Image (cartoon, rainbow over all chains, first blue to last red; front, side, top):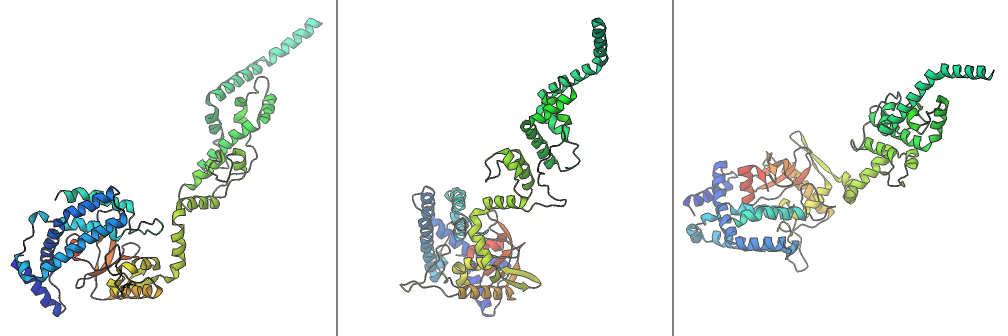
Length: 148
Length: 313
């Protein structure tokens, strides 16, 4: 990772002690570095995500299994990210694959759909979606994910 | 003598000849017109009715009359006979038939506004025609016309038909209404509906100070949809959750924002909310109704999406 990333992290920690925040500009830069890490690790698991999506669309797995698979994949990603962040030397040497840029947010949209899923018609509120809408979301994002 | 009488009779026949011919011509034209135009002529013949200004009611009356003509054809025959020879055809007298005394159609009073929208008045018309829309009727026009369902009842029938599937949640909503809470923040009122609180407390409660729930194995129960520790569903937690959300919204460290919720997605919403940039917690309300929608701790990607695109996903 670039040296600037570490400087920003250090600066943020310093500000936290005094109850202050990074400026919006610096915050955006820091977020950009962090999303590079997320992009890379989620992109590495691209095929697993696609497999879960296709299996669900083809009814090989049910809704619960689809959700479980997505969280399983992501928990592995979080584990890998945690390991990287805890090892300063590894993190310094880490270079995200440029092909992964912008990948993580696509998966995040699918997680967003899972979060607001309410399969029961009687219980669904305006901010929630049905299983059909969740499927439609997968159909919408699958080609974008496959493009990577 | 016979010739004289005959001549006299012939003369008298000749005297009335012009008017008789006229009648015949008129009757023929009337017959032709009624055969050619039938229903449409009937409708137009009734249009100057002084009693019904409303076009829909008028249409119903016209069609009722057509029904009545078929039903009580004898009446028309009698009237035609009174007119003279050759004019006993229904078409020849329809235009002169007085409006039969039948139960008046339900007419909305002036300034009447239908309760469930503009679909009500056409339903009144339909019922008079065939009675098919009356689910309790047998489709018999006469029966339905004599017993038109009051507008109020019709509204109920329609709304029941359309909203059966939400009945349960509506009942629950009504039951919980007294538990809704309002708060005021800088002169603006925001509302926490109890139903929404009960819905969101288990999934997002631990982000706002609720304790996680533990399974029989002693492990924290995770919410299937958020992957976060799940809070217990009970009255205490709902109240605590509401209090904590209120406190968060009123906290001066929570900055007001007006983002989009799920921009470009199916249930995109304009929202107003409060965000604590330090811990990235946020709470959002519908921008128009000011009712609580949701809130949680944003992850890096969600926060970046918010900063870059003013979008909450």
